[in-house]
Length: 147
Image (cartoon, rainbow, N blue to C red):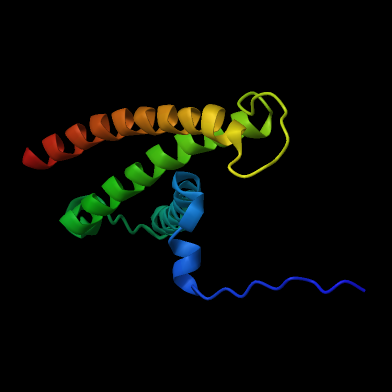
């Protein structure tokens, strides 16, 4: 019976976070997961805050304008930023999953040429679109705080 090669993970957590040879795609994977969890946390908090209206508690208007505090405004901006990245990266992932952005089939030898010549430009295009969306939202956010 042939002996199986064993590769120890000597990098620990940094091996997962650092990306190593994976580059931008690995960081996009991690950031996509983190932003998805952040958006989920915001969604759950939003449901809890909005459901307080059933008991007549309004946290965003009148004397209890608790949610108008600057920390919550920055939180809204972070949620918007997470949404911008998550949405455009999700569109990219859908295109790749459906096969529209995979390229011609080739022998799967590292470095994967379809990833370098088709998927990476798509990744960069989607991140440019996310940056434009982020810049527009940033202007509105900072302009709104100045008022």
